[in-house]
Amino acid sequence: MTIFELLTADAIAAYWTETNSNRVPYLGEVLFPAKKMIGLNLAWIKGFKDLPVALMPSAFDAKPTIRSRGSISKVETEMPFFRESMRLGEKDRQRILEYLNNPNSPYARAIIEKLYDDSNTLIEGALVIPEIMRMSLLFNGEVTLAAPEDSGQVVNYTYKYADDNWITNNTETLTLTDKWDDATNCNPIQDMIDIQEEMRNRYGVEIKRAVMNSVTFGLLANSKKVKDALAPIQGITVGITDADVKNYIFRKTGITISVYDKRYYDYNKNAQKYVPDNKVAFLPDSTLGSTWFGTTPEEADVMAGVPDCSVKVVGTGVAVTSKKVYEPVVNIMTVVSEIVLPSFERMGDVFVLTVK
Image (cartoon, rainbow, N blue to C red; front, side, top):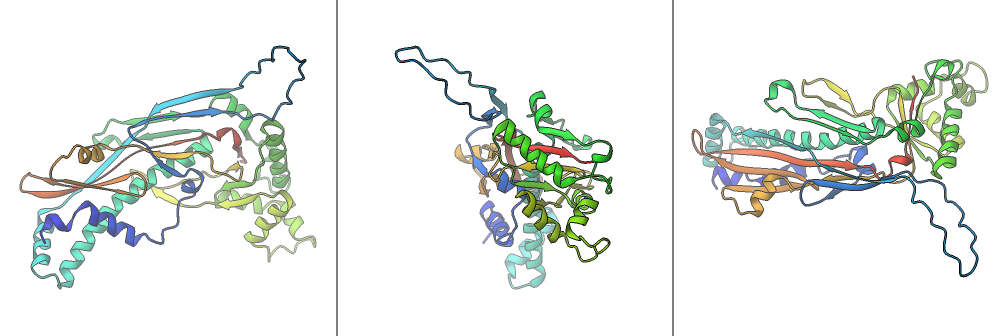
């Protein structure tokens, strides 16, 4: 076996698959299932589904009345591209040669696993990108991503899905004593019931799920009205758990609460939340769109028969590439890339409440 056979795209992808066999999917992977397409142009139909309107009576032999199709528009855009690489250092290359000469050496084996783990960080970083997009769409109606200034990449992506109609009819910001940080006066359960009724009346949508983080859930659980409902004997609130609050809300509204606290590092290594504080997204019990992956240049290279290059797709659309580079000596570079953007066909079925 040679160094070039050891660090192939297949081997790296297989290692990632094995070490992540029990990985819990991101919430966005459930709400926006992954799909694959050729190329990078994404188009879908976006519209707001109104309540059904009764069919108009008609006389026999009369021309049918023409009904308007309502607010429907085709959205078409070019999907963004993401790519990073890691290069095998010359010292690590020498250590791998030692491993190949003595494969039973635990030290040399640790070097191999470290190289695979380094590649795993690129794959994990690729999976972070669509989750940032999906949660940003869900709570803000848009996606904005920019390369850091010191990266040498002058790339900024902004995709605005929300229009004035959605902002007016599908979002609300609580004020004064309605805000959930006013624990004495706020009424979160009634807010949820009101949103359910509004979405039924406006679109015929049944709200069955609410997504928030633990900060927002803490405001909800601290509400006096919620506490009083769970502890009718005044002051006996010590034994109330988060599960009690969630179960009570489900019994009252039929809404299942998902507290989503996953985080990621931004390009400056600062921890960021996928779900923002003080916002709740109310959803139907269904998928909301799709996470579309396009064809990366690396995949196109393989299709074209480019030599000294192997590509393996992880999941639906994350391309892992292993290729030879010739400066200063023959070496190996691992590249992870993706073209990805979610569609949001059921955007009109989502309501976002800012509670503070």
